[in-house]
Amino acid sequence: MRVINVAAAQMGAIQPDESREAVVERMVKLMRDADGADLIVYPELTLTTFFPRYFTDQQAEIDKWFETSMPNTVTEPLFAEARARNMAMSFGYAELTPEGRHFNTAILTDKVGNIVGKYRKVHLPGHAEVDDERTHQHLEKYYFEPGDLGFPVFRTMGGIFGMAICNDRRWPETYRVMGLQGVEMVLIGYNTPSVNSQRGAEGPKKRLFHSSLVVQSGAYQNSTWVVSVAKCGVEDGHPLIAGSLIANPDGEVVAVAVTEEDEIVQYPCDLDDTVFGKQTVFDFKRHRRTEHYGRIVSQTGVELPPE
Image (cartoon, rainbow, N blue to C red; front, top):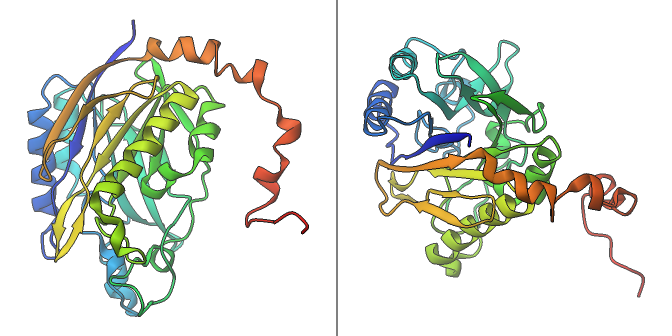
């Protein structure tokens, strides 16, 4: 058995004027609530409100949401608490590189606070310009560039871990690329609006269903644990879905959040539970037929057959 006691640290709403220091205090409290966990996983853009809903053309107003280093003076108390508790952690934040590039980023640390993995969001949703027909803006393509690190996996805590962010969870390629590297646990953070700005009738119930569906599918089809963690609640009048969960390698939900507030969802995840699926139904080496998959990497948009 290779049991990792995992805590999914769901975060409630973060208002635009809430300081990073206050957010880190909330993160530390959640870490204390997760006493005994080996790994704690926080959401996408954990340190701030979901700022891509706002448009500004002032670079200083854009950059104020971004971190130029990690850890930094604001987040050091979080790293110190994790080290003191011998707890690994993963969280998302907005990254501004020394070259001036902007990414939606997540990191993974080991139990002594060393950053052992970094991921930058690949599948950016939304749009790059203000869209007056939307009920609210979703300007990730304006604020960020697509990630340039691919979907790497990392060895730590005796297992193989990968990360994804929000919209990445909806794309099967996300999980499969990591699955082809033997991933045993995928860590996902998200900030997902409760209302589809282009399809308002969809409603939060279906949004939650889809969020769970893709996570469970990715877990099963790659025989991996998946930890999916929300920032949720109403931020500046804009609701975000909750539904943080842990799915096992059979695609079953074994733990799920029940609030839209700061909440710990905890479960002992045995990484050895991934072995059976990887050696049978999803033994990729035996069963994959890559000669027939060319369209997946050579084509983006749909190409219809001749009429």
